[in-house]
Length: 520
Image (cartoon, rainbow, N blue to C red):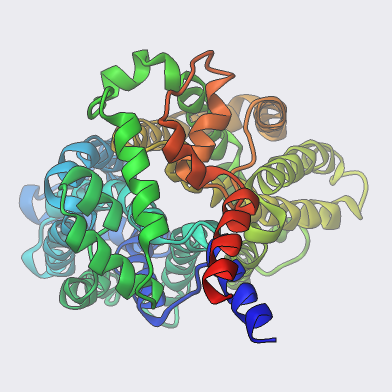
């Protein structure tokens, strides 16, 4: 009986323990996502509710200076700049990811990034008192830089610290806090809270609070163990960080896996964006993240939110109550992203991507028909509402949260920063482009603009089905090996090192035999 028990314990050890959600891992996830990702979502939505009051402030400030009212065309230009500077700043922030994370680390970059939140929060919060609208436009590009950095660095940081069986769930947390940030901004922006003539500066300035919280709490958490070992060459610090994160002392398996990754990358060196774009061994990974990021932003989510007010008004919702409906849509977005956190490890990334883009595709097609027929068929307005909700559900479980998880998983340490720079740049450029051309699309195509988004979602579904592999439960090296055949390259590894990736059956058998002999 004693031998059987010891055999069972040895078997469990040899098969490798599944990582658990320790208090430290949960803490660093909450602090980094609240301190960084939440701000991204908050600043996406915060200027929507007080837009009328802010434009009045622009006009009044101009009148006080010049003695004449601001022309409508100039006011429209200033407001367009206020809106579009945020994604433009996000693009600049994405370009800063590689240099910062390689020099300062993942945690260090997040701490530095708080400067790009606290400073503009103070500027925007005091803009009305200072009677200057220029600082709002300047601050929007600065908080955009903050969002561009956080949207790339947080998934990278958490993905590198999480055990492989929790990597997906933890990787969706940044997107969850982005949706929470959007919802909080919608709630605080209600006309009976801060969406008022007096309250809008406070509403804009609140974005600095999460940054202050992160600035004080994040230093107590460890740096990414992979960064410490592979890029800094400090195995002892990496080992200590892993022990704290996992809650046990035996982290040899993960350290060995990191060593193998380091060994396989020594010939490559640290990849720049240019090297990444010309590197055959990562060709399909790069194409995949570009397709997924383009699909995420060009799939029509901005159009859905734009049309939401009109759709609900046509269904009989009072115009003054539409703001509460918008909050309700934001709550659905949060809830479904939360669902994605719990189902990603059981259903996998690939299935959620296919389901998410597929639901968005079907919703856009039906919504086009419903919008064109709602003037003649009374119940079509309710079908329009159902399509909006279905679209939000599809985007929340697949298109929104999964692409950043895939960037973390499809690239190794030397290429991951460059991959996030590419993915982030595509994300923000597409976001910026949609902001520029969408109103022209609506004017020219009306409801038929959703057919364009339907086609984009369909292309994403076909590509993911044919090319993108499932990455659930695999090490970074295993994922890299699974893509090697498609890239038509061969990954050379030491035979002894490959033992770590094989099922434990042979190694387990040898260890059990040796253990049995020693006991007998």
